Length: 78
Image (cartoon, rainbow, N blue to C red; front, side):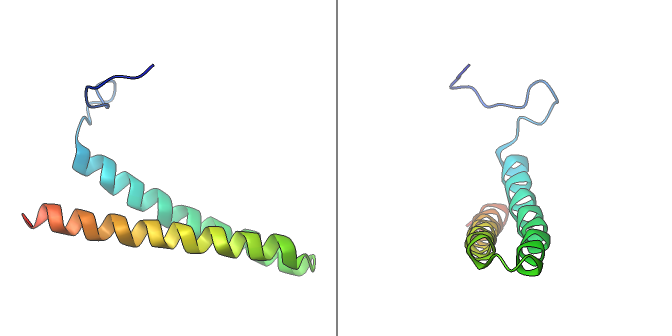
């Protein structure tokens, strides 16, 4: 179901800044979780999977940084 209205009505957080904060947290959480997966792949000597997880981790970190920059600009009025 798609809607042009802002989401979050079910839980009372129809707030784009909250959504951005959630996104940053999700990216950082994913990057942290991927660290464990990288270590598991390295222990199994599976460099192909470890490399995949490193790339995904870098993307998650980049998403977090982009989200933090946007959030910082919006909250400072910029």
